[in-house]
Image (cartoon, rainbow, N blue to C red; front, top):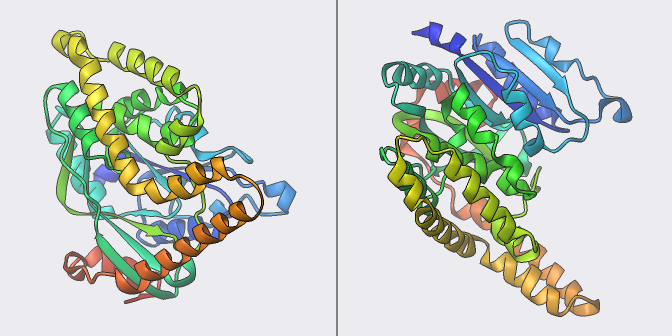
Length: 354
């Protein structure tokens, strides 16, 4: 089944992180991965006197490289997708490591199940002390809260997906559907909506996703510094006066994308989308309420002098305490990964320790 690797293109979007993009490429080179790789790198190479030909060091890999200085990742996804020539695609950041065994199993499933748009497996997060890329201790989290998206009715898929949101575009996906789902991204100016939420909800509307019972990907969390901090959808909706118009346009375009054989779905689409967005935003409130209260509700009222300074100190202190708590108190020894040979191979290659 190894031949399936040739049916996949991995799109890697990166900026200013040589340690992490080289870690990823070195591992793929080590395992002799046969999938195509497209790199979109937003690093300003000339300005910073950096080598933009680093990718040529990996002789076992098939790499297409595109330098896009200082362009944000969410504005590169659709451009790169249109360069793909393989049947399947996955878009990853430079700290997302997809495992070879999962590529084979996901594509094998999709080849045998034409009614599914995408397939994935378990995804786990990990963190390292001082956010190092290798040669350090790591702590592994429980798997992401992924769900099968298997309803035949597109409205029900969308509503249930938004009510139990997870990032489904980390799945291996049929390229044609991936491009279609990403084509709706320009309907918002929000980086979180453009780069994640709109492509994900569109993908759920377009087709079904299967979660298989194997390790698919490990993703690194950063405790000390966010590389590309996104303004949450909740924050964006509070601050941006054009939010309502964006939702109206999004609703209209998504409805037009529903196949004609789902006439009833088109008629009931608005109520399902509204219900799904309600649960999505409610979950956003539960996740980001501290940030919104501290940074916006209070900062808008008291936006000068000592009060703002105190708020900033409080916010930064909260972030540091939270990072400490996660790293030392919330780490979990995950039994799933103990017997995962491919994870052990990755861990040994990168010289990670428990």
